[in-house]
Length: 319
Image (cartoon, helix red, strand yellow):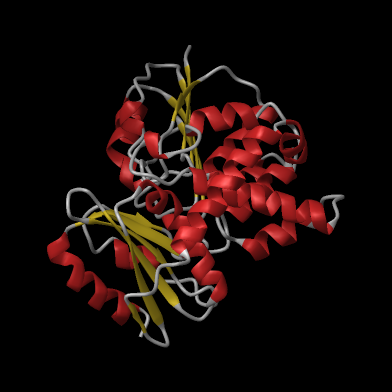
């Protein structure tokens, strides 16, 4: 019997799997990638009786391969908070799916494990920019304000590390970062004992964010703002966390961050207003390679000829 752990390469995916494997240690083939690499089940070559765990990747985007694996009599445990589409009915599938805007996969795994490793759930939830949910969960922990800020920063930095057009853009490959993190039951120990890894993430984050904050918006209204970042590694790394920062700074405004790609198209990050976490997924699914969740979504490869259509749809969605 073989095991496969399939997970998104952002903070939510890494922290969800960290919780699970601390609670249920298991040797497994790790399948992950950059944050936008979500068609991960196509890389799973499982057989009857094998076990596959899937965390923080859209079931809708992996439906065909999920069906394939279930037909192979593979046991699948699936936890996610993105748009799922139709969930297959199979005795081989155990799924925990919740698309509510204030929920992430780390929170769902924390509930499943009955709060066994809540501090890691807090890190993943902060990483998904669900600050109120993270702060509420953190009340169960015996930590002070300084430690809470450390957990928040770790979540932001791990999430930041997942963005890029390919693995070469990242400071750490997501499977490598998971292996480093998952040896620690407490993320505060990871911060303390793996200081060189934490500081590599921290320094990279602050350097890239400094570059992003020098970019002026292409267009702003009371309800929306659009930013364009250049085709540079720092811009690809920072696109998601920059979008989150804009949302936190302007909670009543929707934001679209477009990053230029070498093929002439755009990588798009959309954030619904923090005070009205709706519509981002529906907007992005109108375009090829688009998807996500209510509060935060994106388009992996927006053709340049559809740029004006996207801008019109974005502004209409949040008018």
